[in-house]
Length: 615
Image 1 (tube, helix red, strand yellow):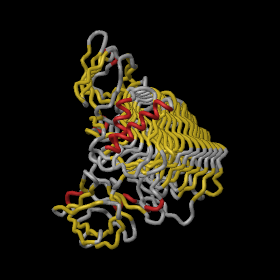
Image 2 (cartoon, one colour; image 1 turned 180 degrees about the vertical axis):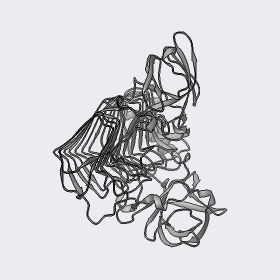
Image 3 (cartoon, rainbow, N blue to C red; image 1 turned 45 degrees about the vertical axis):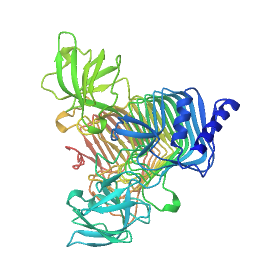
Image 4 (cartoon, helix red, strand yellow; image 1 turned 30 degrees about the vertical axis):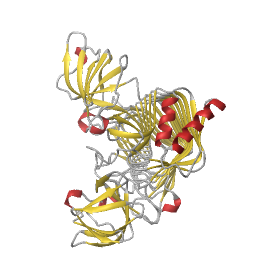
């Protein structure tokens, strides 16, 4: 403890001598930097810069700050937080490629109601990963079993025939799983074939020397020998420890940061304005030869405004998307209407949205028909009563005459989720799920990127029935990117560009388009799949100047689909694309599009993708 107080004293002296810079020197004899950082932050509420030297700084949960936090798209809980920043203005945390090593159940950063925050020059790692990885040694189809050697960084224990993934102060059973290619470091093709559910039916045996046997693994195909079995525990209990959680803040810069391990999303930003990522990376340490860095999304943005800038980032080795930008729909459970307004009793459609700050007085709200995603009424929020995390009462200021009877409704906040987005010079690869999900109402530009994810390259959705992620888009430009071998996994076809708002067939309308205008231009598409573009309910869809190349000697998961598939779009223009290296016999599908212009070698017919939702 004496050394701890000497460090704090040195930090205080540094402040008095060097303005607002607090130097935190690396000292191998210091076992835990959590109390040092906590006390410095508590004693210096003004503008400060925390400066870390080179070295590996250990952080433990025992003396870290503690706070119950509801974080959208993650799991709410009482969290131990190393850097708790609330109500701060003008704070900087900078390192010299400094490694912050977290032990156990910790969330490294929680930032709320802050302005002008810069974090740079650090790497984030944990003592033991939150994701179990094991090399499959053998399998037995009659026994529905396989053996694997668990990677050395993983702690585990077999209890009552259940394999428990463990850490410094936590443990969880097996749950959500996937199988990776040990050589390429990405999911196996058709990875869903190897997924086993549920974990409660498993019988596990510890064979010693880090080898375990999993019996009664209920998958269509057993994980093959030589592959890497990856498991992050049960849904609802495997997103507890996001690395950077930022709420209700503005002017955020994250630069030269690498996340080597996370127990949830690497970055989640909610209701923030103006956030910039420059060389914000998720990547495993090369010497560890693991498959997974981030157990969920690399980055996720909910309800953000202003500008989101993502530049020169490497997103690899995640178990979910690289970037997801969207708003939120709340379900309308009941309506109390009078002569001039409506009071809405609302809940969240997905449990991982509960507690999200959905709106504030003065925000403009829209009532949405969940079967068509069309707006049926608007109003300005007069008051908000948060009864609990999943029951909000909104005095919506919406004329009762605009509230239709007998319609399943959702409510959307039109004052948020309208950030302008620029994603440039980024690489996405070796991850489960998609590269980008874009549902923001501002201008979106994606250029100069390389995408090689397991599922869709860029997905533009909108959904008031499952994930309840809102976001009608206005203008999207996707230009000068390379898409490589996407769509080789997932439970349904995954397109390079997939525009699929969840509108049942009964709710589709040729006079209403959920998304406004999308330009897909000068991109290079290398694919083993027949379908590269799927677009539903777009006002103006332009596909021009792209080069389509078929990957040779690769199997097509869903043969016979249109190379481009358009449904219920007002205007479609396809011109100047290079299809010379695409198979003969391909075709374009047009289903109920108003204006359709195609300058190319293939026939146009009405043959929509039968696999997508209610086609």
